Amino acid sequence: MPDERDFEAMRERIEALDPAQVREPDRPVETKAQQAEATALWAKDDKAKFDAVNFHWQLVTDIPVMAGALRWSEVVWANRRKLQEDAQKALHALVPVAEDLRDDVLEALDYVGDEDEGLQARIVEIRDGDSHADLVLDCQAVVDLARQHRALLESMNFDMDKLGELAQMGDRLAGALGGSDVGKLKKSEEKAVRDRAYTLLDNALRKVRKCGRYVCRDDEERLKGYIDSYSRAAYRRRRSREQQEQQQAQPAL
Image (cartoon, rainbow, N blue to C red; front, side, top):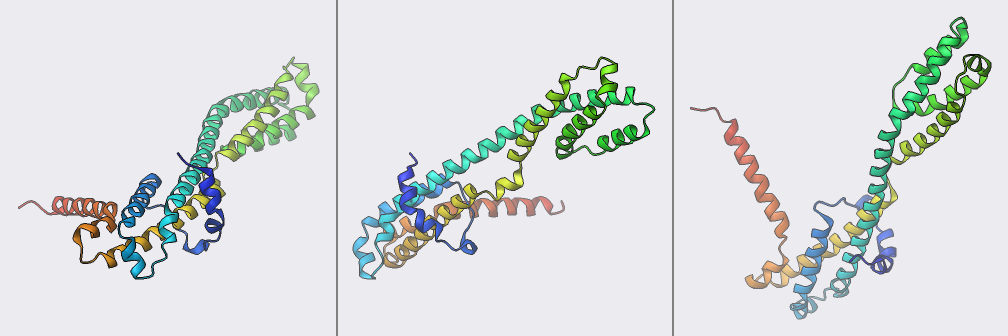
């Protein structure tokens, strides 16, 4: 299970990474963590060979902790994404309700203020724009406009409680809209930390594998433990797709 203690143990090193060197995951996080742990375990049988070339063995020892830190950062990032997804669902549920309330008040104002040119112009202005951000602004604008013309609405027995409902709806919409912003999600600190934790582990794994391939270059059985099988498999799948596409693109004879 992801361990926050692993993350805390690696926090300083994670935060010290140069942002320009940070990479996004090129494979599932759990795949990377498992590969790194397996490589570290494999390398223990070759420790003498690593020591012979003065490899910094602490890097191998740290890999399980780095893997735990990565898993924890992924959990935190996943929770952040879940909050964004929940906000999107809330937004989609609130929009039609807010639109109905807004339109109800505007139609009432349009009806009772038919001869008020200034009021009619303001109604047209509010109705312009159809984005979610426009709707948030519309809620408060309609409430303010209705309160300015309270006497007109009361003269037709309009339910003034709807203004309070619309104001509350605007606040809820604003919160849901902010939480559902995909652009903010991509730039979130949770994602940045996850990417740093991934990079830290990936850097360590690359160094261990490189050394392993060198010291085991004459031992085919040991060498295979330092080969990135995921990348090789992904390459073979990509080449297979490219060959199929080329074949399909060739004209029939």
